[in-house]
Structure formats: structure tokens, C-alpha cells
Length: 281
Image 1 (tube, rainbow, N blue to C red):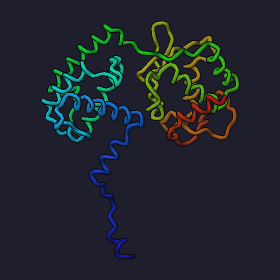
Image 2 (tube, rainbow, N blue to C red):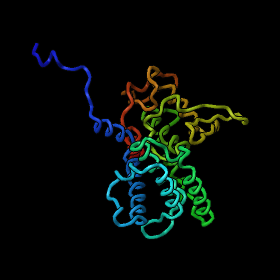
Image 3 (cartoon, rainbow, N blue to C red):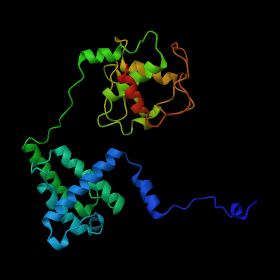
């Protein structure tokens, strides 16, 4: 045995910078981008209200501000911040900046500008600013155009409930979860497990599945019932695994009595692949 092999350490030793990169890398690209944009906006405000010799070009100065001074800056920032063209932000955009700054200071300063009592003044002013935005008609959310009845029927036609196959069933389950339950984004969709979908019975006798963002009601009269397809899908998953998205077995079709029609592991970025596959049907 070579001396170098005998002295080889069991555990690696990451540097502080490598650990920091690991922490920052856990968020999605969209989250990192939103955080960066929030910080850039706040820095732009800082440099506009500060004297010329106090202006900064990077975020390091932000991270060194005492909480009391940062609270005062934020208190003035919330009601005065504007888009680059001078227009006011909508409520949702202003809240996005707030959460971006919260993530930044949690990561860099290890304090929370929302829950920390030292920021009560700036949080109260933010709430007042939001009320004013609502009064100006800027509290509304711009929703996407609803999916038409024709497009829904086209999507449903890709799945044959009388002769289901693993691929089309999985696509239909993915679509129903996105359509009924997911309100924000696909960021954590691939992390869902079987236990993420809670089945309950309501007063009318209908049940729904919900991971906390929406409801999916049972329609017993419809062969394309979303709850029914999820129930069927869950019954076909590998019982030894908890992940919701699993690889397909080679079987093209299965009967309602078959079990374990999906294979061993979930796939990274699986929701994106399902989305592309769904668009091609």
C-alpha cells in the first residue's frame, strides 16, 4: 500500500466558499435570479439617496449595515421604490422584492428582515404601502388566459381510461396536479412524494387531493376524473419507494389489477420531461 493511500482522509474538507456555494446552489435558478434582482433594486435605491462618497458597487456594504440603519433604509425604500421607468410596482412585484431581500440577508447576514422584531417599523410601512397600491388598483394579479374547453378535451383524449398505459396515465396525473393544485411554479414538483397528496372526504361526499396549494374534486360520473386517475396511478407505483415520479416499466398497457407498473427511481427534472412529452401528444 502506498503511503499516500494510507494517509488518505475519509472525510472531505470543504472551504467556507465551497460551503457557501453549496447553500446558494440549493435554490432554483429562478429563485436565485429573483434574489439578485431584489438586491440590485435595493442597491440602486441606496446609491440614489446616499451621498456620492457613500455609494457602493457591490452587496458587501449591505451585509455590514447595522440592523437599526437597515431598518430605516427599508422603511424609506418600501413606499418610494419604483420601476426603472418610474412606474409603481404592483403588490406582487413588491412582495417579490421583499422575499428576495429576506433570502439575501438570511444567507449573508443570518437574520430575518420579516420576523426579526428590530424590523417592525419597516414591515409596518411595507403593509401601509401595499394598502396604498391596492387603492391605486395595483394589487391585482395578472392571470394567464384559461385553458379552453377544446384544449382540455384534446389533452384528455391522449389518455384512454378503458385501456390505460403507464406513460399516458403518468402524463395525465402530471397535468391534473399542475392544473388543479400547483399555484406558483414547477420548482418543487419533482420533490413530491405519495404522501404529498392528501385525500379527504367533504360534506358532499366528494374527495380531493391537495399538497397545500389547491383542491381537486372527485367527479364520479367522468371517466377522466382527476382523483380517479391519481388513485389508479398511486396503486401502480413501486410500493418500496415514496417518490411520486418514477420511471416507467417496459409494459405498454396494464389492467386495473396490476401493481408496480413503475420502476425504481425518480428522475431529476422529471416534470420538465413530462411537460415536453405532453406537448408532443
